[in-house]
Image (cartoon, rainbow, N blue to C red):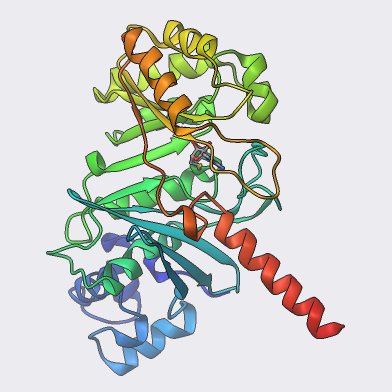
Length: 354
Ligand code: SAH
C-alpha cells in the first residue's frame, strides 16, 4: 500500500510541496481539496504535481463500497481501504444534526464477549488519514462542504479500541479539529475506550477537551471480567481515577457506557451498585440495550426493564439516559455489518467452489 496523503497536516504538506519544488501556497490548495473529500486525481493543482503525488500516495484511501439506509434514516457505510480491507461507519441523523460513528482499527483485539468487531481479532490499525477520510467522504457524499458540513458530531465508537491505536487517533483528532480543515470542535467529538488506563492518563495531557467515554458495563472488576477481558488488566478504581484526572485537566465531565445484558448486569441490585460506585462524580451514564450479535450468546433486556434500570439510577441521584438504538434493521452494532459482509463473501466463495 502507498502512503496516505490525508495523514499530513498543513505544515507537513508545506514541507512536502517545497521538497517537490512547488510554491508553499500549493499546500493550502491540496489541504482544502482533501478536506472536501477530493481524491488526489481531482485536486485543483497542475497535472504534474498530481502525478508526483500519485507516485507516492493513495488516490482514494477510503472508498465507499456500499451504503445501507435504515427505515429510521440511519445510514451505514461500508468502506474499502486501499489494501482491500473493509471497515464500517454509521451516520445517525438527529434533530440537532448528524453524528458519524467511525472505526479506528480493522477489527479489534480487546475480546469483549458482546461485540462483533473483535470476532476475528485485530487485522491492523487505521492511519490518522484513513480515520479522517471516513468523515471526509461521508461529508462529501451527503452533500456537505467545509462551510456547511453534513457531519456535525463524531463518535469514535465503531470497530476498534481508539487507545490501542493511540498515536494515530491523537493525530486524527488534531487533523479533525484543525482550522481550515473540516474543523469539527472537540466538544462535538466523543471518544469511547474500554479503559486502557495509562493511555487515558496520557490523553489527559494532550489538551483535547472532548467527551471521554468509558465502556463500563459492570460495577465490580469480577463481573466486568466476565464480558470484558481487559478488566483483568485494569481495575475500575484506576479507571475512575484516570477519569477524574481527565476532568481535572480539561474540565469536561465524563461518560460511562453501560450495555444492559439480560441475566448479567441488568437487575435492580446492579443499578444500585452502579449508582453507589458513581455517586458524586462529574459523570453521566449512557444506557443501551445490548444489540444481540448472532455469533454471541448474550441476550438483551426488554425496553421496560431498561427503563426500570434507568429509574433506579435516577432515584439514586445519577444522571443517566437510555439511548435509542438506531439502525437495528441494518446491523447497527459495531462490527456487525463487516462481520456479516465477510460471512456472505465467504459463503459466496464457498458456493462458487461447490
Ligand atoms: N473499543 C471502544 C469503542 C468501540 S465500541 C470501547 O470499548 O469503548 C462502542 C460501544 O459499544 C462500547 O461501549 C461497546 O462496549 C459497545 N458495544 C459493543 N458491542 C455492543 C453490542 N452488541 N450491544 C451494545 N453495545 C455494544
